[in-house]
Amino acid sequence: MTTMTMTGDAAMASPQDSPLDAPLRPPAPGAAFPHDTQAPQAVPQPGLAASSSTNADAEWLRKAFKAILPPILGIALLIGIWYVGSAGADARIPGPGKTWEAAVALFSDPFYREGPNDQGIGWNVLASLERVAIGFGIAAAVGIPLGFLLGRFATLSAMVNPIISLLRPVSPLAWLPIGLLVFQRADPAATWTIFICSIWPMILNTAQGVTRVPQDYLNVARVLNLSEWKIFTKILFPSVLPYMLTGIRLSIGTAWLVIVAAEMLTGGVGIGFWVWDEWNNLKVEHIIIAIFVIGIVGLILEQCLVLLAKRFTYETP
Amino acid sequence: MKKIVQIENVGQTFDTKNGKFVALRDVNLDIREGEFVTLIGHSGCGKSTLLNLIAGLTKPSSGSMLCDGREIAGPGPERAVVFQNHSLLPWLTCYDNVYLGVERVFGGKEGKAKLKERTHAAMALVGLSHAEIKYPHEISGGMKQRVGIARALAMEPKILLMDEPFGALDALTRANLQDELMKIMAATGATTVMVTHDVDEAVLLSDRVVMLTNGPAATIGEILEVKLEHPRNRLALANDPHFVECRAAILEFLYQKQLKKAA
Ligand SMILES: Nc1ncnc2c1ncn2[C@@H]1O[C@H](COP(=O)(O)OP(=O)(O)OP(=O)(O)O)[C@@H](O)[C@H]1O
Ligand SMILES: [Mg+2]
Image 1 (tube, protein in one colour):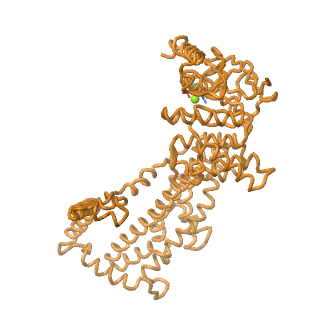
Image 2: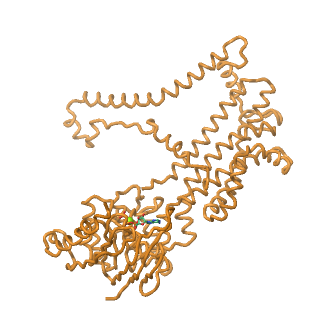
Image 3: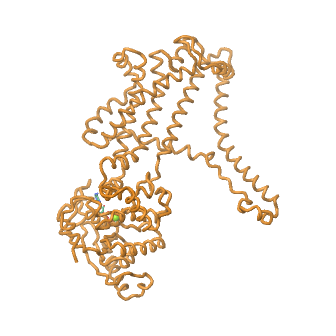
């Protein structure tokens, strides 16, 4: 019934496979003897023990090196290209050095306030996060129960699915004027676009999760003759949870993408507006800084949800 | 002895993409109280289908199924099922998995303390008191099956239905669990229907072995009475003439009379 698939799974699994997470250190030979009294007899060649424990350390270092080196190389390459690209006399883009200086100045006081349109980058990021949190929270409050209903009742799903299929591909920004019209203010209108873009993945993934509850578990519920409430709390909810979290992760990703664009249009305080403002001031290095900040915040949001999802993923046999 | 399950002229047809599929036809079987019956047959012949019918998880397309003289309208805790793949809920500990059933069956008339006691007793019965706080993914396959059995037994069912409970286990674990199961059945005296494709297991455990013909449209081919005294000992039985005879009869049914269609 849905076009949204659990593509998130692969992405979810990858961080835990990182070799950095589980450095396999073979135990040092001495460790096998727990009693101090035995140690002197058992390890007649202390030099040997010491050398193989440094071997283990070296092995660990080598692995850590292997995990860290390629990303560092990649970033160095990026900065290199950036440097070359911004090197010429007539270059329009500020180079890494200039941007770095601007960043140091900017982050020395991220929370200053000099009037409504001149605030520190910290305030702008927080304002955007607040909008995302509100729009996203309302979307979760509406979308998740709706997803459960759609998954549970086929008729309802047949009724609503065409509407969702029609509306989902529409850019959330197209909804901005409607928000402005209804709410008469810019701030709730931006939140409204976040709501719109967040709600689809939540509905679709939750509904998909409900239809994918293993028949075996439902059979258990039937044999035990569990009450509707027990079925919901002990079977439905826990098995849908991973799907729900995928929906949440997808929507927070898009929400963070959309908020920047929405704020560029609505103005006020927010990282999107800040980017636009700096463009008008022709402080291009600030725009580059904003790009990094937006990227890092998005990454953190995503990682938090990946961790959360990992916590609630059960190994099903 | 009293008939606890009566299956009369039961047929089961599934609607599939390629039209109707007749899985079972003309199944007639009475199960007596306290009896241990095994269903044996080649893979895909319809053993699980028949067991699910007795459990009430599916309804027969034709014929009638009675339990205790009443039509089987749906599943219920008096017909506990040990599933082919154990089906423990992965987000609950072993204890909580068992408790879920206990609470449902006895929660209305007994206090919390008594329910806990029942759960502990069921875990002890299958020898898993030490694993109560573990999650299903933290224990071995044999232990999972035992928790599944504990969950079913804890509900004190009239009939215990088991779908290849030891199918996925190695021979050694399987033998241990069979011995344990024999002890438990001797202690509880519950009526049991068990699906298996292991001939030795069938003869060792059962009072009657029900042999199904190959599908599609499978039905009961032969029913073999195993007239061996309980308790049984696998080592002593290995050379028992009746045991050997029963074993040969089942093998002959499976590998001579039913082989052609299976290949
Ligand atoms: N829900 C269903 N829809 C369509 N066909 C089904 C359904 N359930 C079972 N079948 C078919 O009925 C036949 C019997 O299946 P069943 O699961 O009872 O076999 P089985 O004897 O338990 O096999 P195994 O030993 O491999 O578990 C099979 O051919 C199977 O494809
Ligand atoms: Mg089966």
